[in-house]
Length: 321
Image 1 (cartoon, rainbow, N blue to C red):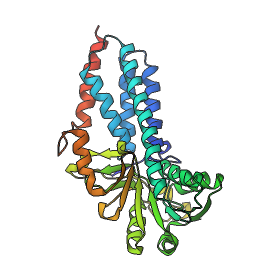
Image 2 (tube, rainbow, N blue to C red; image 1 turned 45 degrees about the vertical axis):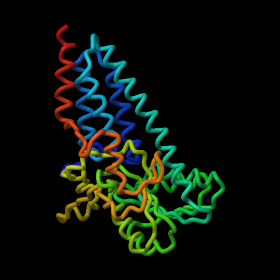
Image 3 (cartoon, rainbow, N blue to C red; image 1 turned 90 degrees about the vertical axis):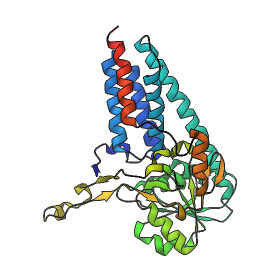
Image 4 (cartoon, rainbow, N blue to C red; image 1 turned 30 degrees about the vertical axis):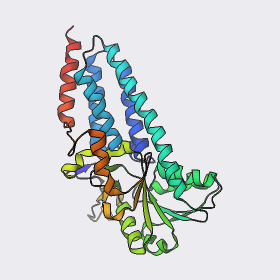
């Protein structure tokens, strides 16, 4: 298990926003680099950020694209490296914005006038879906969980209430009681696994399980930039976690310890549909989609550790002109 230290990557940020924060910071470090050793430090920052949020498919996939370019291409100067990194990131962030909006439009079309929607944690894609449905004149009400321990749901409730959507905040433990009022469950994703499952903030799996019990449909809203093809070989990474900081001081004093994993998997059989920029997909379609994008099944993917090493080796030529 990995202890979370980089909490700025978690508080008040959904999967996409956290990844964008890291990628923009990485680009700043590269653009400010005065020599190749500064670029090495930027790569160290990228690797540490992945360690803090290892299930962020956007961060993983974009890092892989950057490292491939650095490892494969020959660069005559540090400025060439800076330009290439900047170009990759600009293209990626534009694609993310477009896919997020398209996925939200697909989800919004499935929201009906009068729907009561239940959601958990914070997801820009889910929020945009509800905002779009509301902008179309649909009268919707939203139930949002607090989403402990980071209380992500508070930001979701704030965003929706500010534009006039009737929003109810509930404690996480009330989901099974309140689910009978909901017409649909909308959830975001950090990653979409190779079997059509989803990795999301802890508590999402419980919400999906309760929804299945209550016969309420679960829709995941996500661009396909969150595909996580490595999971075809299984998911062996333990989730990041918080520890004693979740325990009140008086309990710490008598030896009570804290443990709160921050992410979990929603099995594919608990997901009714994925709203993506390619339309509404069944979880069973994800392997076909990965084969289409990566050209084979199982996909051939080079480990990030090897790509980091290759990129560093190629960049080392710039330190010996």
